[in-house]
Length: 257
Image (cartoon, rainbow, N blue to C red; front, side, top):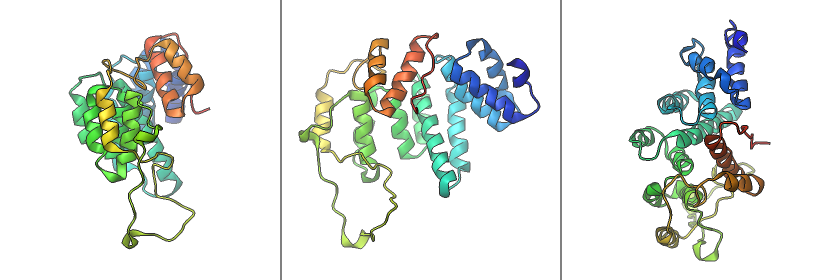
């Protein structure tokens, strides 16, 4: 692998970093870390995204923050390229949430530098119940309210499918009604509206332990294995992370399959 990491072609070096990441080849961790100063941006990016999976306790937070900012400034705005860029941003946000230690002051700095949707994703995967008040505040913002509800449930485990937490969507006035279309700008299709006071009251009444939490519980190995077999893709992604964080010999599970 080392000769390929030293190849002149930057695409080969980047592919090697990704392979080391996917297979968790720990004995190449130092070599991948050495590519953080590579001349090729793609190589540096793959190294930043690989190192957390190789060693979840490594401090790569600043590099992840820089990667988020770079893509926010340079991502395409239209077409399939924009969709793929947004997915990459959301993935980086998730990994950033995992990697920031609870109580780390850099969390506030990172949240202040990125859009609301990415902030909510970082907080969800960060899993700190102490951040729930931030999500309560975000529930007041109609464009991202449903994602904020989802993030609160992701941390607390509150069953928001229960009728007492359900609410109807805000009514659309005639002035903002749009013609029927096969396309949608709704980024939160599938996430239902919730009753904010009921959700906040229920979350505050829960006796949550210190984080990180995943659906209200500490992500033990047994719990994560159960979630991998039964849960949604976002939860399975988090479960995969926590499994690798707790066991250096555990394989990285690609939950996209």
